[in-house]
Image (cartoon, rainbow, N blue to C red):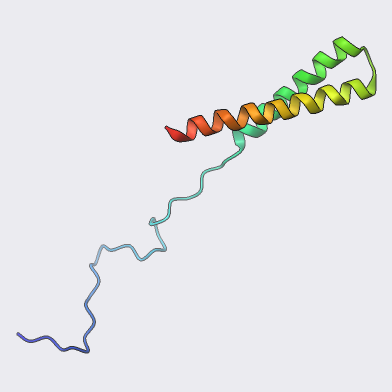
Length: 84
């Protein structure tokens, strides 16, 4: 039977239209990074407390260095888990 040229082909009844599950939801990223950063910042704060006694500058420096180390470590851990 001939088909009209003006007629558009029908979509398959089970075809996804792009609104439903065609794009998976974004997972929560940086959750591990935040936890590890806070943990390392507190760890750095503790180390600096024992090394510098109660010097405010020493405490802040220890917290900042610990936070930076925690961010780098947490980023690497998250990157390795996301590959699997």
